[in-house]
Length: 219
Length: 219
DNA sequence: ATTTTGTCTTTGATTAATCAAATACTCGTT
DNA sequence: AACGAGTATTTGATTAATCAAAGACAAAAT
Image (spheres, each protein chain N blue to C red):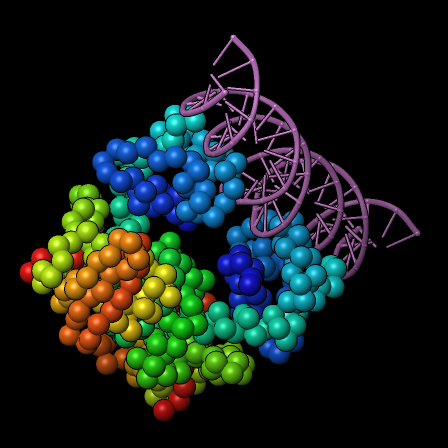
């Protein structure tokens, strides 16, 4: 039975493994989890001893099959909870992330099963992130286009929002750039660093780093 | 921000204060919480330092106003969660207690508010236990009659089940002695220690200590 | 080849929660 | 008044998670 701290470490490693068995630097984890580097080293050693990951000193860490399975289960739980909070409890899009952060460590599989059934076995959460299946196949990283890389003038649909922070989600909501919305890039200027998009509700302008947080797919 | 351990200690003290400002012995708490007496003494001292309770050495503990408020909030959360799990997630009566035990420490007030609204502000949970109001008026202890003390032959209604352990609830379900059911004591024998009741579904026989766990009210 | 820089690991402490075992207290009996 | 039984408290350790600061290393710069 991993503690919630261990679950959070595993989740962070999974999310920062750009693909398959990528090695994640301990510094990256320290940053992501908001603890000092020394803490990461200590935790990582004890988790390696438990068989949840491999640690090559001064290189980084890689999840074992077991660690990956636990991490995927936590992510699945998180995203199902978010979906449930929005669809059933009618909570606000912007606040569910932190709620799910706490609940994902307390909710039993029994309850999760009921939630999954009531939601009709959804495959993506309100932010457009895929919900890993219980049999734990990979969670695919957004490898398609974003508003920062897509073709200009092409009609697109917003697929996924890669930043769950309340202020960013607030902006997304205000502009209407939510998953499912139709959008088209009108202008992208690498000198000024801005992207101007057109959507049903009007126009939205955002910076390139912000545009890179919005996955899109050509229609 | 009390830890979940502190919340559990407060809840246990509240539940074992037979009324108002009763003093609870540390030994009682050790028993209830499943830890050694020494642990209780240590925890109790630190909680007293935080102002959650008063501790008279070798006497017992008493909740302060603040400790009582926290304890009532936890109990309220617990019972609303149980009700939600049964009514909305259609979970089994018998398994919701332990689920709520974990969830009560992770669920935010924001989510609780939504749950309360969706349930229509209920005043008692599936076991018939009263749900303390948010303004924290007392939770009344079952001071009425039980199947062990009520008048024989009088028509009654089951009010509340005072033991949430799965085996006992299993028995309650099997016999139909659930809150709301109509029942009548046919025979109570203090020599053999048994109580025979009649209800719509037939007859149920149980021991006196068990009968004392079922609150009833005359119709 | 040496130095510098930036990242990682170690070391020594701290806090919360817990136990086992030793000690101390209080009450009811003799 | 002294004793013994039953509780309660102390004491000394342990585990998980964390920090600050010191030390070690590797890769880039000179």
